[in-house]
Image (cartoon, rainbow, N blue to C red; front, top):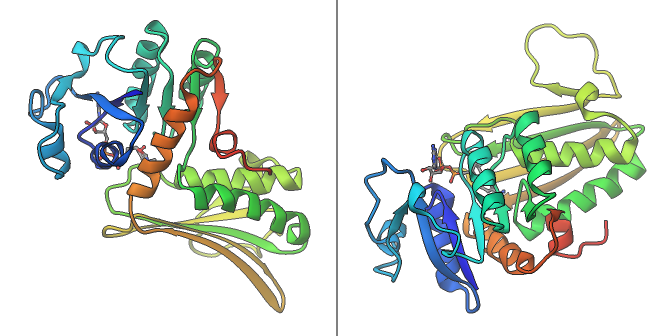
Length: 267
Ligand code: NAD
């Protein structure tokens, strides 16, 4: 199976090159970079630090519909709509890992999924997707009495906050409790505040150094607290999950799929 990359020179793009190199049954066929990137024409294996490979970086505007069977996109929200338009025009299945999408970019995703199969997940690690199931279970038992707080930490370069994964954890808990996250979320606290409202779900964000990604869902009552934590120590875990999703997606009907579908998790 031929897999193409949008944004091959990003932090995730380079690790995706490595993950595809490690895969037995999916192979990197095209690695796109921005048209003005100094990497156009240079070897993608050298870019990823894994030695020379058969693929050189291609300018995004030179990408053709025959270059891949499935594309993978870990880029930026500002690029997502044009990448989706290209995929729809070329009937190209796509795995999307880009986070921090606004309502109109999410609407574009829904619209594109009427025409092509798409996997979209805020986090491609198996552990985080299992965590989404565990927090639902915790919320169903403790959610009405415990204070619920979600904390996350990432590297200093991350551009969206809270992380897409933290939001997905919040959505899962709110959904389980029949609450609307848009109205019950509290993002950060500062200065004098009234006593905590038990119906809220709090978020706190850390950005520091090279932290790959850490998430905790805290359910705290008087006398006890439960913490469910996931720590990613390598981006390869997200990249391998995305490659797994690409293989699963090939040949599927148009629609918007999640890692719950890919991993066949019973939530
Ligand atoms: P990065 O800044 O290192 O890479 C961004 C990529 O987008 C680069 O390749 C860049 O060249 C490309 N890009 C930017 N502007 C472009 C343009 N105008 N045209 C074409 N390409 C353009 O970021 P990163 O750390 O690799 O993360 C990328 C995304 O993936 C972020 O949204 C991040 O939050 C997300 N992410 C998701 C997961 C997951 O499991 N879903 C895991 C890690 C990161």
